[in-house]
Image (cartoon, rainbow, N blue to C red; front, side, top):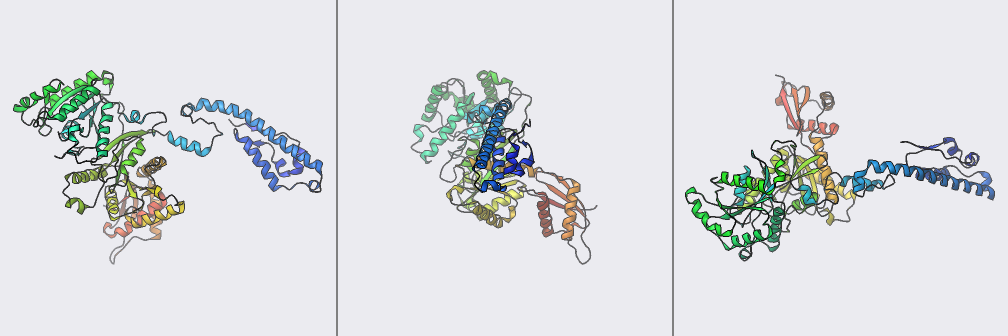
Length: 596
């Protein structure tokens, strides 16, 4: 509601000192800003309108009259603004209850910059006061696979989930972060979680992993167990009952006795000897052991039936989890890619506000591509943390099987993603490997954000330095010079907002569709400046253009001779489209098609 506050004063005195102010009439302002606006007008009138001649000649009475007039003006303005502020605050409280709950309802007088930052915090990046683990916790019941290292947990996870989401190798310690996959069935749906191996005391002596890495892996398993309804305890049937299995069974019984625990004896390749191999595991005290083989799929059906029964018994309240998908959500996949040890896992943890990924100073900590699902406002995202990509020659010449599998999975994550966030080390700058990763992103048609990470090591750099750095960066990486560039630090909370805003901006351009009329206007102007190529016997001509698809935006030009239009003219037309229509952060596809 717009209120008019009429400042009634001695008009003669006011016109004497400032005729311009008197001629303006009543002051009209919105809400509590009346006070500040009135004071600004008085200060402006003092600067623009000189005092009357009688005052400059030493008329003390005139000076006193002018001072009293200005003082009464300020008092009237303050009184009117306080009255209007009370009405405005009551309406503000009725319409901004959600902000008040978070302590952000400061009213219209609050600092505009602070209100904008606080509004950004409420866009779904885990509201203040709400636990991050509660926000990202899946709605479906959760079943966690646990066990000691190298017993086949990841192979069983891939078998039950129906996709190759986890790396499988005959090496202990391949899985480090916890992996999630949704399993659907006719009876109910649940979320299956793969975890790293539980390191018992007997395994510490022979384990070559750093002590910090082992503790973080154990912490990841504990976080998964806290949100579980049922547990699948996997043991190795060929090795029999080991001291590590006994220790883990004792720990599970002591800390998670309220959950359903399904004992699974893996590596029972033959059904004939499966029962014989599993009889020794009765001593663990978890009931009937299930002999299975994750490789040959024997015993998987019986195991799945036991899992479904355990979920029903352990969490009957979640049986209403949809058999028919009422809330089918489409997640936008955002992959964080780059060289090893540039801060990909730290950045994902910063965005999620949780220790979702294991972070270590040593390179190569992340082995699997880890998906993390979250919602920001009304938008749903899947953030994918990938393993670092080294040079192809270094990977092929290495004897590390895990690294070769990790690189393949990282490249697959790039192919499946909608937006890639390419992280660079601010101190090292762009390298040839960064250029190759950028080419991979462009080849698969992904929108791209270049995040200059670890920018906080240059605290003295100014905004002009950022512009110079950005210009030099795009000059050296011409294959993705259309990318959006942000300067971040994974240790600062402000970087979360920068990355999310850049991703959302790229998604808008990624899904942009131009009207055919506007598109042909741009093409006609481009042709007027640079004619189509021609040869000695024929000349090129563009009839019209249309946008065929989005994600990424693709344009089809109908011409008379498609073979005349080379890469140089294609690049020119792409630059003209970007110059006139934007498309920052997304690749463009241009096709030349004959009239027939």
